[in-house]
Image (cartoon, rainbow, N blue to C red; front, side, top):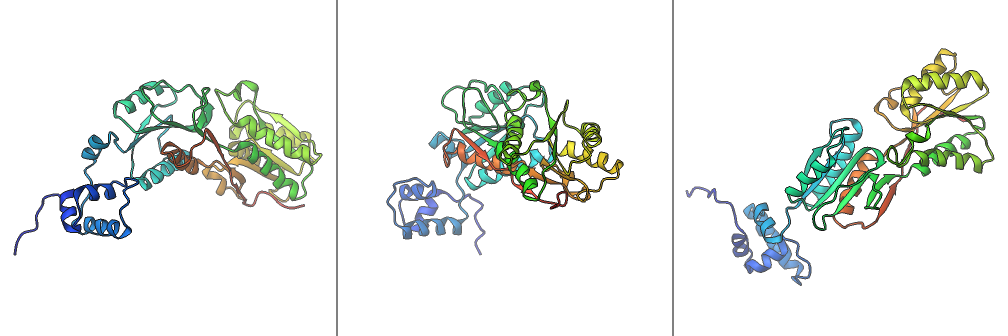
Length: 339
């Protein structure tokens, strides 16, 4: 019995098996448009390639097409937090669906974006995603030539294509969720000072609170609003506790984010208030602990995975847009009751 050959099947081998010219086989296997080859021919070629175990040589394709079929992904945080892993998962899934490989680089919180972008350019990526864990406006370093760049969860002053969460819509949704359940005495804990909502610090947080204010004003409601120095459980505990002491008639509180909500839970418990029987709480972001609170926290989820996926599609030209806002779905748990 003859030994099986260890030689890698070539495009010429596929052509012989399919009884077609190498040129026609190349058109089919490289998905070249406008080949005018019949569906039967396409099926025959793909069947022959599968039978032989043919796989294109990426290096040869890169030389022939002038493309590396790689996407660069530069982020300030690639470490496996829930948000980072979700965004990376969306990027990898979309890239795989388009037959692309992803090269990743992390800049860290201290900068290094210019160096990371330069490294990606040196590796001749076909396009570049810049992903941020906290949405803000950043300066994108210049690159040689027409390298496509899309920002994910961020924006740039020069209006590069970007994907952002629809924070204003999320604010409206959260407020209307409470109103639809009969709440009229609503507090808001989590508005930040102006310097913390400047575009360099956050491109969307003002939208979040504008949405809340717009929805409540549309219902003719005023709210008890508390500005805080930051977002943490400690801040939620301290400032949420003060609000509960000053305004005991409140039936619901909107927290600036889940970390603030965690602290409000504790402040409410210390005052003998039961959630949601005595006080309803709703928030934003959907941190991992939100599902493990008792009762679970109702919160608007930041769509990191969806933003990563859409960023790849925009980069590859499947969806051309200057800016896209993705909805933040409301994850309903047990922290809100109907009055």
